Length: 334
Image (tube, rainbow, N blue to C red; front, side):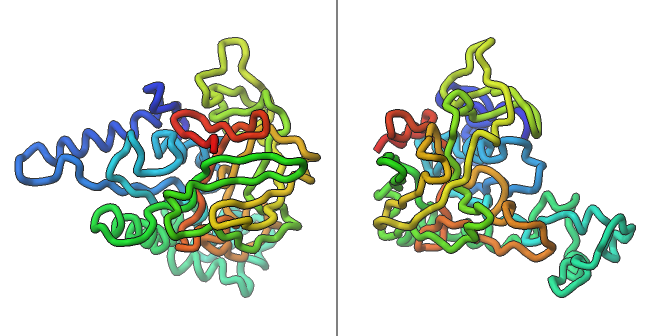
């Protein structure tokens, strides 16, 4: 998870390795004539937030899992389907109770354990089904299976329906309002929905960039100050890499609501109208901005969803001359 995410168009990194892996497995599975179809359908699951395990750029890793297109199937990964898991973190992903040794199966208390043993049932839940290797592996597998099943039904069995959640196709800025567009073809009969979220916690999962020079696809390190090793557009050039705390140049903004079946409006008041980039669902889980608690975080509770129940595919794009510009090979200039 901490190697080079890269770009399938440039032939580097995980973004290139993912379609190659699928291609090689298909080749092996179909080596015996009359067995597996050489273009057999292939399903994959993006990585859940998993605390800090994904490093600074877990969202970028998920983009690399799609060969950089932000959605599957795509030209590099035909006949594929995907279950997004950025919004399916373990409901009890807050690991303070786990690390504080508050529960009977890991009892060595280091602090106040009242909230862990209280009515939220944290310890009871943990005792019933313990983590594997700690909380980095979400235990709730059913939502992932349901999303894979929906994709397989469409791609493999030709059933009606959508194979993916809403996918970024463009954006425009007018004054303090950002309009974000989603691909109408991929939406089909689906539509974009905005679920309620606590605005007091800035939990929209939608951020805008305040400094154009700090747009970065992958940084070095796992927190705090870092260097940009890949800006997503073939740079940076040696000696020109940005350096700093890249999360601090992004500010959360509020999603106003759905403007049509395939557009939403976003207020730029919290950024003072400044916008050099946008990102959604790239950092943390659906509750990571909330006040610390041992209460469970509801799965699939991030704000942007399709009416079919599939979440918006996370995205990251520059904003130049009041229009979106996605990193190749993804295109979002509508």
